[in-house]
Amino acid sequence: MKIAALQLSTLPMSEAKLDYYFRICKQKEVEVVLLSEYALNSFFKELESMPISMIKEQSNHKIEVLKKLCADYDLHVIAPIVNVKGEFCYKCNAHFSPKSVHFFDQQFLINYKHWNEEKFFANAVSKYTLPIFLHDGIRFGIVSGYELHFDAVWMEVMKKNVDVVLTATSSTFDSVHRWEELLKMRAMLNNVYILRANRVGSYKEEETWQFYGKSSLISPFGDVELTLGDKEEMLVATIEKESLSDARKLWGWKKQVSKRESL
Image (cartoon, rainbow, N blue to C red):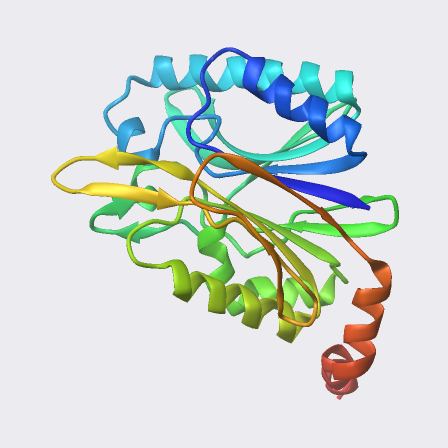
C-alpha cells in the first residue's frame, strides 16, 4: 500500500494547493495521506490571540474542502484540526474518508510555559484510548506528536496490533536529532512503521520559531527509510506487510509481553 505525508505550513483558504497534491496522490496510487500539524489552522501561538469565530470559520471551511477532495480522489486523509463547539476549542485529529469524517480529540496536550495547549484547548482529561482504523488489511493508529513521548500510548499500539502509526507534528527549535532518535526507538521496540509529517515555515515573536520539516518514514526495524528536507514537499512511501512480519518474527517483543499478560 502507498501512503503519503504532506509537509506544509498553514494552508490558504483556497483548495488549490490540496487539490494539486491530491491529484498527484491519485496518479501515484496513494491511498492514505497524512497532513502536518497546524496545516489546516493557523499555528497555535497565533490561535491564542485569534477570535473564536475566526478559528471556527477557518476550521469549518477546511473541513468542507477535505470532505469534497477525499470524495473526488478516493482518499483517506488524517489531519490535525481545531474543532470549535460553542465557546470552546478542541484540538483533534480528523480522519476524512471518501464517505465520512470522524474526529478524535488529542488526549495528551503540551503544557509548557512558552507553549501551553493544555490551558488553551478544552480537551477532557481521561484514560487514554488509541484511535485506529483499518484500511486494505493495514491497521493504522493515529498518535499526535506530543503523545509519542508516553509509554501508555505504545502499550495501546501493541495491544491493538497496529501496523502503521501516523503522527503529525510541528517540531521546532533544536530538536531534529532528538525527534529522529525517538521515532527510530519507538518503531523498533513496537515493530511498526511510523509516518511523520512535520510542519515547515516559521512563527515570529521575540525569537523566530523555525519549523524544520524532515518528515519521514521509519521502518519496523527502526531504520529511516525516507526523509524530506526543510521546505514544503510530499513524501510517498510503500508499506510492506512482509517487513512488518519479518521484524516481529526477528525481535518477538509482543510474544514476550503476551506470555506475561495471562500470569
